Length: 235
Image (cartoon, rainbow, N blue to C red; front, side, top):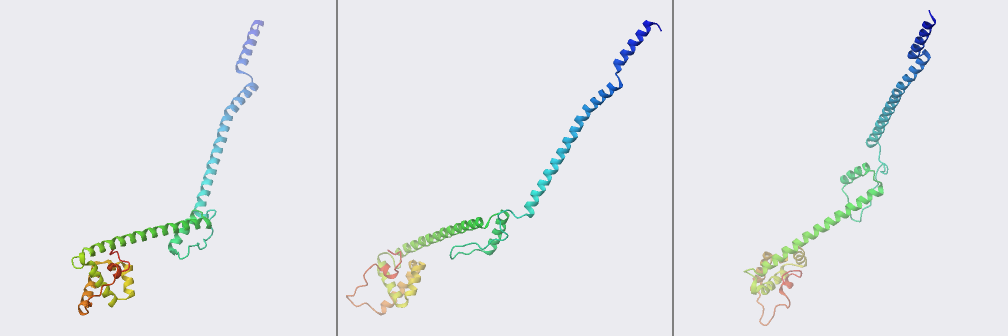
């Protein structure tokens, strides 16, 4: 081989070696590239592991919270509630109290907090009872007023002769009744009912026919309606 040929061969070999690289260089280059490719893969695997661990932790926390709702007693609620303090004369239905205690324990109410709810419930019940009683009394008063008006205009004993007939009714009540009957008529309001007044007017007339009032004597002074029924609306 000539010197020129050797030179060409050397240059070609050098060019080929430069193009293909050395084993060391290729190994390092290959190792570097593989490392760069493997690093994201490893990072991705690590990230997936962390996500899986986080998901598992979240599931465990959720299971723990759910288990706490189902099995654990809420903080603040006693094992069993003591008897609640009630106002004098007040009473509670035992079944309703049992239902309330169950709800109170589920909501974690302390004894003191549960007592406040009981106090509020009693206050509301008393308010409703007072309102109901007032409505009933108002209705009774309205009815008594209507009865008294009907009595004033009654064709048999009302009108211009109302006072005279009420005096007769009062006489009958005094003769055949008593304090207890008078009290009953006043408290019930029946002393204003036209039919009750009619009955005593007729009785008064019957006894007056047998015992006429001597001349010159006057009937008792005062409002005849008040003489018959002290609390009557006949005025």
